[in-house]
Image (cartoon, rainbow, N blue to C red):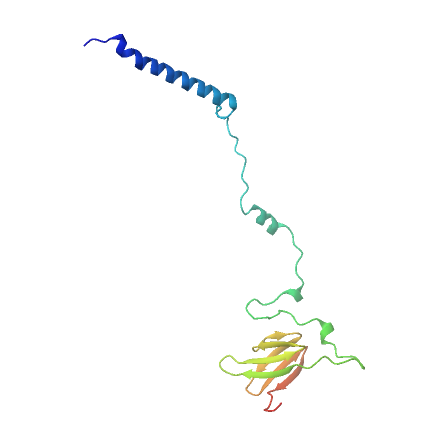
Length: 161
């Protein structure tokens, strides 16, 4: 088999042109800054997602006053008694605070009382708290409240009241 120069010339010219185009393209990419040799990337330390929370938890916070604490297992329950200023008897000539009104009693395995006080309606269980009162007990006919050691008995309303 004989190799002729005429048969090899077109593929050699095509290869030379391809090489020239690749060289010019690479040079243009380098000059534009689009394709530059990679520089070593210095990894900056990444802060933990919880670092800010950890700092907030470790800073000394002012403790809450005892009056602001409550028992999380009792609905509306407070761990401490109401402030002493609420427990003082009214002065002479001063108006006595309004008396709670027993609206209804729901008596079943878990008895509840519906009480209206100062324009608010409360649904309460035994040991429940509202305003400065604590519910001592709920029976079929009455509800016993405690306000600073003083008992208040609310009777079930009769028909027509």
